[in-house]
Length: 196
Image 1 (cartoon, rainbow, N blue to C red):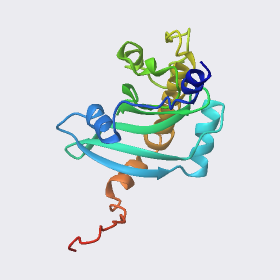
Image 2: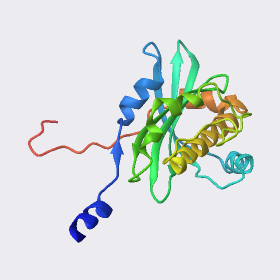
Image 3: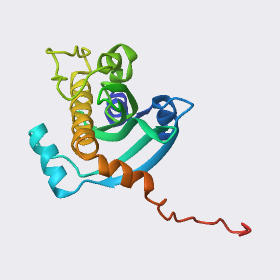
Image 4: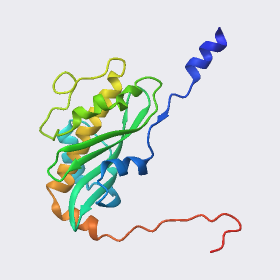
């Protein structure tokens, strides 16, 4: 009996639903060219985001830009939010007009609450923008038994919308600098015997 209880409480509750590559493929249309950038918000923008949300948030993000031709048609940011004690990783897609196109849970680490990844909950985000409250019992219906995970998805979506609005929509020069920036240098490790 004790060993059964230990097994239940010591289990790793992490559920990986999609890799980042798979999630990005779902957010962007096939005909879009996708550009990935790791960004750090300038202090002024970071303070604006914090003030808008009423809480302090991180200033580094993984941003994806979906291009149709030479114009940005969609943005996406991969983010983490704390559910109860652990984090959940998800991606939020946002149209050029600032409306949510997709929210996709990539990994849920908590033992309970993984139901947050179900489409019946995530579909509620579509069409929301930074003017919407995106809060439980206001314009969103949470899943019973996954309330904290649902709250985390709502917080994270509000955060992504604020970052996109403050960093990209209000400052279009940031978009052009992201598109013209050269690809960052990547490190490669070679396995013994690999021909270079």
